[in-house]
Length: 558
Image 1 (tube, rainbow, N blue to C red):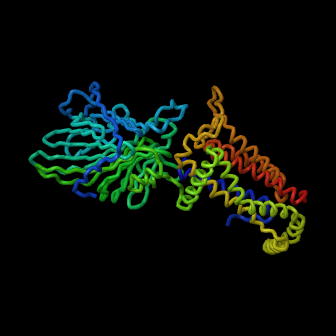
Image 2 (spheres, rainbow, N blue to C red; image 1 turned 120 degrees about the vertical axis):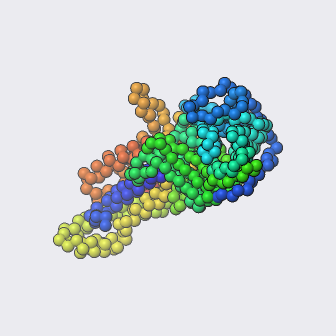
């Protein structure tokens, strides 16, 4: 669920909840709602003690598309494997890029075949990740050109392609204990005339199909602002965008550009970020978008060379690693709106603290719910007492309504005087719900952004608190049966039955008791199980609190 959809849901939830609470307390008083630097930056030297390994294998040359350039003198396409404790990368001499990149310490969901998470997966007939277009050189489709493998070692792979006395050289430099690597693009002009290529790369936008990459997002950090757009469905009209463009460009000081999911990121960071142009585009509305990053054209005189250097991050969105990689990559973690982000960070910290006590994130969510309920208990108690006193005032309120039925202003003044005399705030019951609202949103983003919660088990059939749980799927229908939304709905019905609603019309009260739980059931059915668990436990604690207060305050008065 993207930000706009979640905002629409959250606001609907808040408005409905506040309206229900206010209606239950004060129905009689309802009113209408009023870059380009030309000096090359050397690749950072590797300092890790353990080196990745690299092996090269040759495979039969794939059929070349009609637009492909003549191949450089090489017998066949070669694949070079680079392996470390964190990743396994497969580089291809066709296009001189990465055709597959696996994360060894992260596994795909068991129901999706398991195995390592595949962050880059070259499709059939497609150019590899980090291919280099260079259309200004007139080389044709360099993404499918056969480069020569100049050298391949444990840390470095060098590709080279020469045509018309112009040589394109690409160097990939890897580290072992890091998801960051370096890419150098160098063009050497051996021709008689100057050339002016626009250095650039094609960013990876294809990952292995699966739940981890169901909602890939394009992102660019430019001029201090992170711009985002959905990769799948790019250019399609939506609720908040009726006529979106099929192309977006960002020109300026680009710190990084890439694509990410909730938990993983692939981004390119130009060493010379000034005047960099990032382009998102799709051929048709709804098609997957493509991402290119390019510097402005730069002149290369005969007999000279020019290079550009890039940092690349391809790995999990672990805050510590992102901060270490630089370029403010940590801003790719979507913590929500600016006013929500501090809450999200606080909930992530609290969840980790609870997890340190009992190493189960399901239990940690329950402990967090208890802490939130304890913190809001005094306000919730005031709400319940206020609702009970509101019920006791109903006979007097009805007398005032009858007495001033022809004078709404006088009626309102008399009712407010009665509330003041009885020590009742007709809007007091809204405050606990208002406090629950940021808690709900903050926890939602905490579950969506913290990679620690990915595939975090609770127990029994709940094997991933960051995703909806499924007990079983109905055969022939394919409808997943989810227990937590059912339990949450039942707890909501019970809570409504126990809540004083003497100020509400009986027919309306029965309607609300049916409509609200059903609506919440369908809204929560596709939510992460950790969030539904929080809401269910919160309802149970509210019921226990209501039972306790009912005993303290004595029998209800009609």
